[in-house]
Image 1 (cartoon, helix red, strand yellow):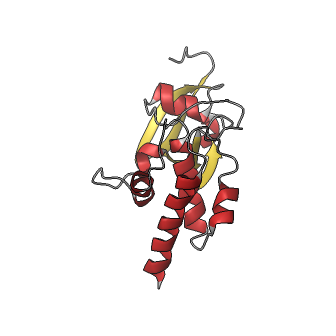
Image 2 (cartoon, one colour):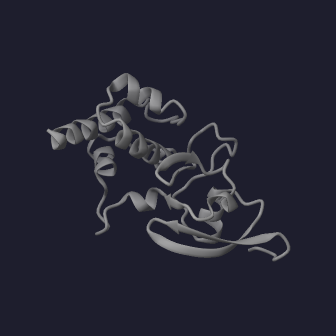
Image 3 (cartoon, helix red, strand yellow):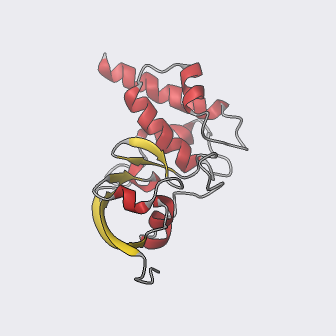
Length: 165
């Protein structure tokens, strides 16, 4: 826990809940989420911004939680994998699509991929397969080969298009 010497009080909204907490100046946003407030769905892989496992949404934008300091999130709204579920606790559309399309294997990369795709599909509901693959280029998955992940994303994109029609 913070030793008090090099800490700051930050105020953020995490998954819709206002949080005020003391955090060490050096803590990354991912460290803050995991160690300070106990949301362990955000995974730490490379801790260099390469693998994408730590991706969260900050004010709706996908960011690498390992590269952003927690103090930089002051006043921001942060959404983690835990915040992508529906209010009643059921899986969100993209999460359900991952289940339906067998897009999960070890699951380590899944939180980062889901948050990346959530932001991307929100901004690009007409995305096609090459665009989705490009959007995922910063998220490393060593298990699935991406085909079922892309299939799940395309199914959600198709559903979004149908809802707009």
